[in-house]
Length: 136
Image (cartoon, rainbow, N blue to C red; front, side, top):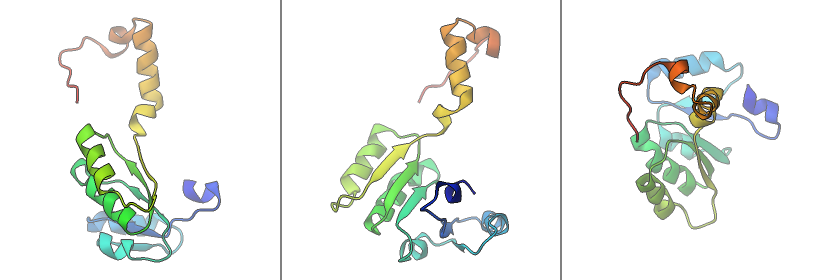
């Protein structure tokens, strides 16, 4: 597991609403990790110093705030809008907890390749004629 390879950190708890994913997580982890569907149960644990928030977009802000208020440092995998960022900043605990926002998707090799193609004016050749574009 990548977290274990870093050293000094270990996965101790996972919360997931969906039973099928909880079962899969239990099977994928080679050691005992606390797995629950109840975020509050996970946030109440005393052996957890940090949380990674990976939720549907509309839950990112509240999950990040809740983890910060539980005394955890937070990394939130999210495509953040200004509104959500303001929600987290305004709701963040005032005891200097770290809440970091990020997005792995736009750092992927696929985005780098698309950027290179665009700069070389080869984007249309690489992906074909664009019929529709949606920007968020």
